[in-house]
Image 1: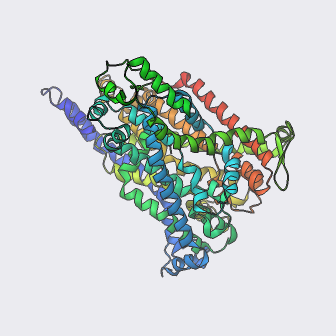
Image 2 (image 1 turned 45 degrees about the vertical axis):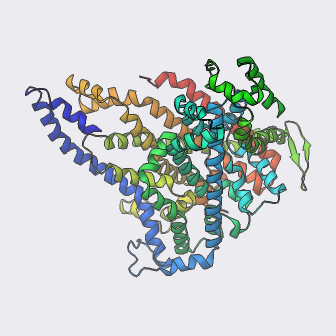
Image 3 (image 1 turned 180 degrees about the vertical axis):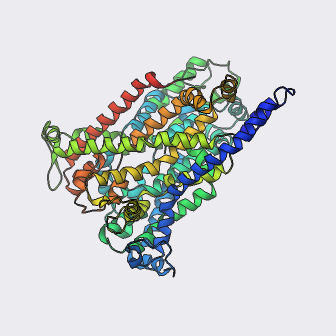
Length: 296
Length: 331
């Protein structure tokens, strides 16, 4: 993006030439400073992750030594094996995966359908219903947490995947996001399909949904991130370690044992690794998706 | 639900004489209708909108709208040990007003939000460095700065606990190198809040950088060229072109940061751990709510706290939108 604008002034005649040349040389000089600053900041940003991995491969004695041991020497891979015996890691991992899948699939289906209807269909009370949905966006989650807990409790869903996942299957934000997308699609595409005799669901599923890829991608990213990382709600509706997702499981484990640092580090590395690896693999799409949708 | 069905048919009747089985034919051949302002385009969707909207409306009403009403009601009740609520009027609010914990929680939440907001100027510097012409490795830097934002807060809190540890933490070791005797960060009131806020800043910096970078991209480069032709120094360009044109993005990031700041819970809970003696003096509004609702099981009182949080967040957001005229420049 910046390259063409830099090249542009160089085009008209010799008179303009010295200026861009000077700018280019000064540019390279000052970019070195930019790199120094960015790299220094980057080290601060990444240090906790590096430190986490290093301590997860150390002994507890090394973790507690002063001055700190930066390189553990012999790597203690056994800490990772201990994760599986000291906390119900596999069960918690499975809960995390399950609630993330249920919520993401649920939101993709429900939010795209509702968003489509709000954007492009005509029905009575449309404005009122939309206002009701959007009003939730203004309300902090604490305001509906106690009744949500009662509902899940009443259904006998405490300590179940269904109970943790249920409220998060529905999303006002997701509906809003999809609605904004569908509003921008030109009428002509829909009209053509209608002329061919497609019913509204066929128009939605065959014409509109395939166009919505980027928005569905953004919604997926947001829901996966939130679902995997969320703590408060799972903490409220799951009391047994083996029925908690990882975020709550790690916090609870840390609350129980305060001295087993290395296992705690290994467990938290394992807990966040799937999302971090996914992020690094898809970094451009994740960053663009979050930037375009604005919110987490 | 019958009303949902009736009206489109009525609309049909108004728009064209065709009805029932010939409705679709009418949609095809009928005269083009004026599109209403709401963006809806047809009067012929029949039952379909019900199929599309009903599942979401069901969940939204069951899990969000009705609960909001219920919490409002709960805030005027006291809960018995075995369930059942008794109306106590404004007692919970009166109790809350004289509860020193509420003041502490509000101040702590504001201090946390304030410190995290300091990340915005830092993000502005990083974003403008990243958007320099000819800058390389920008994708790499973005990943570095964005990683804390996507990482699980409870998991990163674990390593920050080690870093902040008063006896063997690497931070106090580093401070010791420059002759500063660091405190036991996470168990000393005051310092604990600063520690939580630092982690909060570290976590949210990436988001601000991404939004501000997008804002920078939208500034036309001609403006910078014109400024430099007029002899403006890079600093002057930053101050007179970048900053004003970036204010809408800064405003957006500020609003989001404040809203998220008021939701402080995960980092506080995971960084301090349960049973930390400093928690009462460090708690946030959401922690106060969680503690009353689910640890002390005083749900009526907690509902009142939730309503107060709603009120504060609403007031602060409104204030921000009111203030935006003073400093946000829309080009």
